[in-house]
Image 1: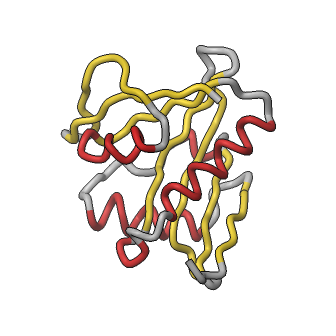
Image 2: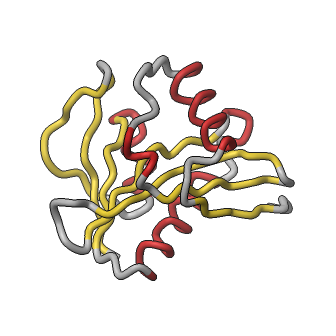
Length: 143
């Protein structure tokens, strides 16, 4: 991979993350309630490929379980899929979380992409549920 990749952390929701999430979750997948109050408290990562925003995610402390962080809103622009950008941004989020003292990472995966997260070491738990009519499953891993 000869790309010039940089991942930047933001402590407020950056416009580049908004554009990626708007493109992937709202325009492509039809979600209507993409942005929420968690965006104000989360750390946002944006992966840039040659200066162009290509992927994003956010993470925050789980208020219910000590040492647990939740990663969410993981999105890769369609033109950049298949280049491991999702794996790279998840790995970077994991590094931030570990440095902050996190012991476990959970995420609420769309069921159709659970295999991707299993390859990253996540395991399903709990029951399948619906988010805006889309099947999701909780997944976690220790770090």
